[in-house]
Each structure stands twice: as structure tokens, then as C-alpha cells.
Amino acid sequence: MKKHVFCLIAGIFFIAWEGLAQQIPLSTLYFENPFMFNPALAGTDRGFKLRMDNRFQWVGFEDAPITNILSAYGPHRTKNIGYGGNIGYDATGPTSRFTMNGAFASNFVLTSDLRISLGINLGFLQYRADGTKLELDDPSGPQILDPYAPAKVMSSFLPDAGAGVYLYHHDWYIGISAQQLFNNNIKFSGEDSNDNKLKTHFYGYGGYRFSMGRNWLFEPTILLTKVLSPVPFQMDLTPKIIYQEKFWAGVNVRNTFESFEDISIILGYIHDKRVHIALAYDYTLSTIGKYNSGTIELTLGYNFDAIRRR
Image (cartoon, rainbow, N blue to C red; front, side):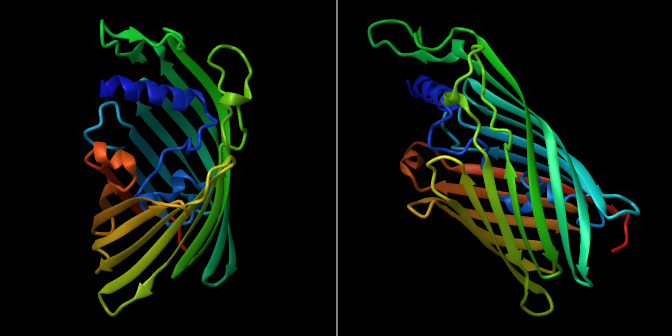
């Protein structure tokens, strides 16, 4: 029963996009790969970076959301520009979303220790919904298909774009970006309807590194998210302690300024300044938390050799 009710809810959620929720998947470990939502990060480091994020939301809840994102980005060898791309796959029950984009950024020197980067990304999104999996339970008989959902696999292919600005210093950084700029309509039936319109997502991201002696750093980060619809601001606040730039631990608190949504424990390890491993466990504070065992997110990364001088 729980499985089919969730499938029905998920189908309605993804097809009726006016719902009061984000259309782009969440990430607790956003600070490990801010390039996924801000293309201006490309070229801000001396070498290329590879990041793979895997999020398993609401463990124990059948057909719960699963998100996988692969990112690669880095600088040009001689010019103050950068480029990269993202591939993402997000599935919830009978619905899925596949994204692919390429990004370009131009970096500018403001002072000896302050730079700014401007970036754009272009790509496409594909939404898929399998109406044959939207089943209802009949207490007096077998399971039946939802009569209001087409009993077929539906797919919609759309172009998309994003843009961002990133200001960075050795000790601090701040960025603003937007995704889903085209505001396309998802057309599953060939009809044009504002009920299936994609909303622009705005992101504000920043952090500061405080030295706490020879071996310790304190680095709080913040991510603000706003969707162009009657959805409140969402804030992720993430303070963490770093030891010898190898081990780190912290917490993440997510709220909407109206209620607290999740609280998370996060851990990480960096080997030889190259291999990155980060793990997060989210405990859901909202009502749905009663029906699952939390959310697990794992990020794996690799930093390649520097190819550009500062």
C-alpha cells in the first residue's frame, strides 16, 4: 500500500509543477561541489576537479528519491578561463530527470588576492514519467492503474541554461547563480500548459575560513535557495572543523525560515590533497521523517595536478 501511494504522490508532484517544492534535487554536501549549481566555479582552481555525488533520500521508503551527479571542471592552461560539465540523474518512483550541460567561465583579477568569475552553462533536461506504474490499491480486489494518469511512458526533452557570479579570496568566497533560466513547459501530451512550467532557481553561496592555530580551521558555509513561485527561502547552514586539511566534521541544518526540515551529521577525509571522500546523514524533522530512516549522501572526488599558475 505504501509503495503505490508514494508512486501516485510522486507522479502528481513531477507532472503538476506548480507544487510548492524545489524542482532541482537537494544536496547536503553542496560545498563539496558548488559547480553543480554555479558555472562560475570553472577555472577558479589551478587544476581540474572531478566530483561524483550520490544521494539516497528517505532510506526505507520504497521508491524514494535517488540522485546521482557527476561533475568535471577546471582551468585553461594559459588563459583566465575555465570550462566543465555536469551529468545528473534523479529518480523518484515512476518519474525521472536526466540532465547534461557544459559550462564556460571567465575569471578576472581584481587585486593581488581577490578575483571574480562569471560563468554560464547550456544543456538539456529530459523528464520521463511511467504512467503504467501509477497504481492504486482496491481493498476488495486487485491493484488498478490510476484512471487519471495515461497508461504509457511519457518523455519530454528540453533545452536549458544557467548563469552565475563567484567572488573569491584565499579566506572567503561568495557566489550568486540561477538555474532553469528558460522556464520551459514540460509537454507530455503535446499540449502547452503553464501547469507544467519549470521555475528558475536562485542560489546564494558563501563561506569563510578561520584559522584556529597551526593544525585547525573552522569553515562555516551557507547556501540560500529560492524558487520563482510561492515557495519560501531555504537555508542550509554548515559549520565544520578541519584538522590538518585532511579530516573534517560538522553539521548541516536546513530550514525554510518557517520550519526546520533536516539536521545532518557530515564527515570527510582528504588524502594527499587529491582524493576527497565526504559522507552525510540527514535526519528528517518534518512529518515524513516518521516513515523513513533518514537520508544518506556520499561524495567522491579527485583533484588533478595543477596546470595553471595563479
